[in-house]
Amino acid sequence: MDDELNVTYITLGGYLEVQKYRYLYFVIMFTVYILIICCNSTIVCLIVIHRNLHEPMYIFIAALLINSVLYSTNIYPKLLIDFLSEKQMISFQACLFQTYIYYTLAASEFLLLSAMAYDRYVSICKPLQYPTVMRKTTIKVFLVSAWLVPACELAVSAVLNANIKLCRFILDGLFCNNAMFNLQCVRSVALSIYGVFMLLNIGLFPMLFILFTYTRILIISYRSCREVRKKAAQTCLPHLLVLISFSFFITYDVVIVKLESNFPKLAHAIMTLQMIIYHPLFNPFIYGLKMKEISKHLKRLLNHTIKSTLTV
Image (cartoon, rainbow, N blue to C red; front, top):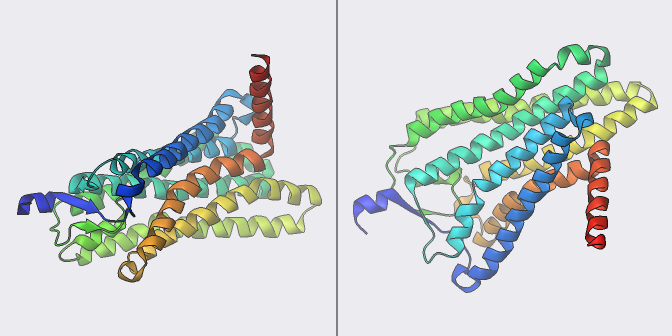
């Protein structure tokens, strides 16, 4: 392979015995991908169809589930192709694009969770102001910002990294993430500083805002009547579970680059699969079971489906 080809293509070295188990891997991951699309899409459709779910909280949930589908679609098609390929390779430009989409959607998730936290704060702590504060315009601004702000900030990083020189061409992973920046010959100080800025701006700050908001909700709920505490538990617990789950995996994703050389390949593959399997399926499961109104409509849909099947 000549120098130009070495610079252009990257080998994904995180696959374990893919030659031996390629068809098993393909069937399992294809099944998981279909489940992710179906589960998330079902909840989104229920929210769209039923008018009593056309509230800010459910709109944000629908946006979060759409984000999960996009997140999975960025990874699974290439993953499935690699399972059936003799060599697991990707062009540098495609790898950079996959990394860009991956972190844009990850950051969008944090911002959507921040919007949901704010919505719950206003609903529980300032119920009389809720109709005035959470107007349709406010919801649109939150939704557009959640996708547009990370896309713009990460676009700057992607453009600056587009012409970097690589000295390594094997990426220790199943898909492209921030580990690809370890392939650079020289790490740019300016890009590293900008990376820290992005991590703070679209990762840490939203997380701190969410924690602060839910702390305020907890304090006010504790001082209020039993009905308020019950409402807070029913609507906030699913959001907190999703936040904890997602924060854990993103923290792993960021930290693993620092430990890459000392981290066992099998453990790395297992954790990576947890990120792309567990979380996209966790969201619809939590919201489908824990959110009372969604759960009610979901049970009706399942009962209708079962009756229709038995009738046929």
